[in-house]
Length: 175
Image (cartoon, rainbow, N blue to C red; front, top):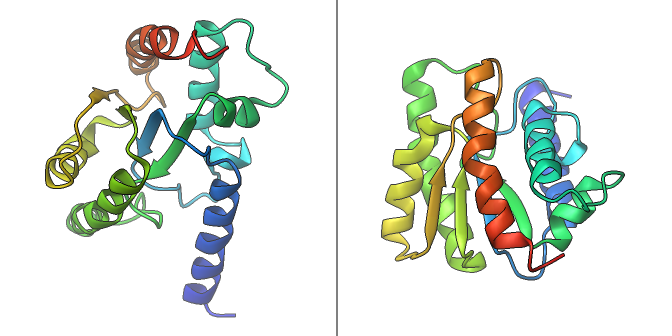
């Protein structure tokens, strides 16, 4: 099997898995840049972003079921999508920027379809793409831009500091 066929099959499998956890109504829509090239994925519960979001939810909502976080995430009407449908973390800067711009069309369709109350951008570098998409889609709501909670301790602290209060405010009435 050729590499592009493998990539297409992996993308389809990711999207099937993602859709399994899509709530009927989305209140909080998390937007990441793209699934990582490593093969890890939020909805496989094996990525750094999964661990960071799960940690923030557990800190904000101590009564949350820890054993099946993805099901709790769905039950709370939360959903995570990516600006780009395919990994971009191994592209050069020009290709990555182009992929992000092309991803705006995809994200616009998602915004118009889901009409979330809150959009949480989980990596600052894609904020201009998300904002442009929101404007073109005539989406109105709360938009929170967070640093990616990965490698740097101060980014993780800022991620938690900004996300936890929103989760408490938006989701405590749901529990």
